Image (cartoon, rainbow, N blue to C red):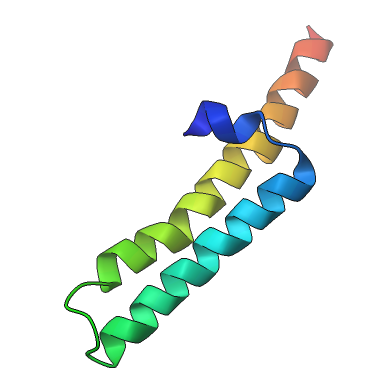
Length: 71
């Protein structure tokens, strides 16, 4: 998924991240109201995964390219 996500442009990245985040929040909400039997772990994963993807795509790659320029 990381390779696929890295090929997206900024607008698509934001749309995917927003969708994953709100899906995770919705699953947690449904589980909290006892409407579904699962949701906490999957919802939490859908909230944390976009943060990791954004970090690896924007923060970590820009930091690596800056260190490459110094050498």
